[in-house]
Image 1 (tube, rainbow, N blue to C red):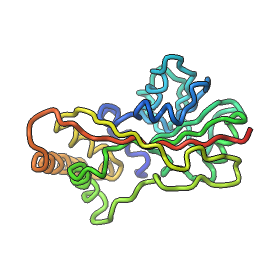
Image 2 (cartoon, one colour):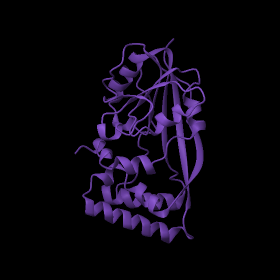
Image 3 (cartoon, rainbow, N blue to C red):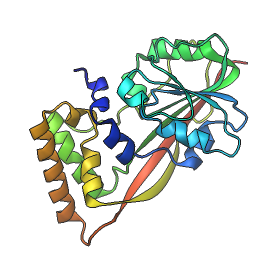
Image 4 (cartoon, rainbow, N blue to C red):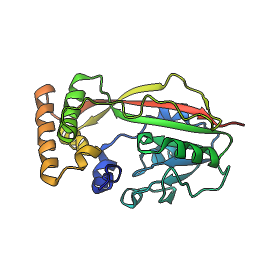
Length: 245
């Protein structure tokens, strides 16, 4: 099974445990004036729900290639498709957003498709939401899953540092990414379970995944005292581009 298609094997856990974007970061990359928005690689609809929660919610098209994930999207038009081949007309949407997904795309093909479907002056907003890796205990617990999946290979920034391919008429509105820090209260089992929703762990067999859960829970208990719940620090990083008018 390709790594990018592993998330659907635990769609319910992904939806329950993974963070959606912080509203302040979403507001920085998605203009309030956008009336038709594509949530690209929508997964279970974490970003879709955040967009629809706005006071004057736009029409949202949730594009996701895994039907197991897409089945959990509500309140939006669902399209089973990939970023490189969007089932949308030319110049038909005001904004495209994608969260924690750009590293799965063919950058050239995806950028070309996004430029095609955006109206002149439309917006591309990219988001990444994750447990804050600068907090030592977070890095340690998350590292349990990384080590089980990828050995001693050092972690990467997974697409956080990149340049949008040139030649498609986009202007970078946020050369310095927007970063919003926030926290979420989770049980210890939820923290360990979240570690098991990442693609590298999902590639492992069931017994190995269970071992990751137990090891992550034990490491968390060693590093963080007290009972449940735990205040888990997160960050949402955002960048925004405007299409040529």
